[in-house]
Image 1 (tube, helix red, strand yellow):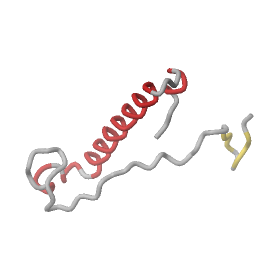
Image 2 (cartoon, rainbow, N blue to C red):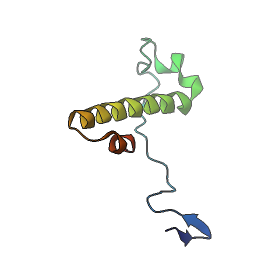
Image 3 (tube, helix red, strand yellow):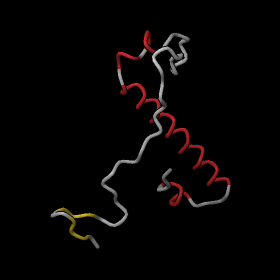
Length: 86
């Protein structure tokens, strides 16, 4: 059942706050995480946080894939693996 909260419907199990991503803090003179070998300021700093958010999404996707693979190895049914979150 849904309940009203601040004149908006909130469904059970649904959170309004987005899942926090693990965005790495990178200094300007550190090497760029893309693997080019350049300094971050010379490579992807112009893109701002967009590049770092993309890396965080890729990292989360890899972690989720690994988690689902380990659950499959443990014999968890597919319908439970499908809805698993990090």
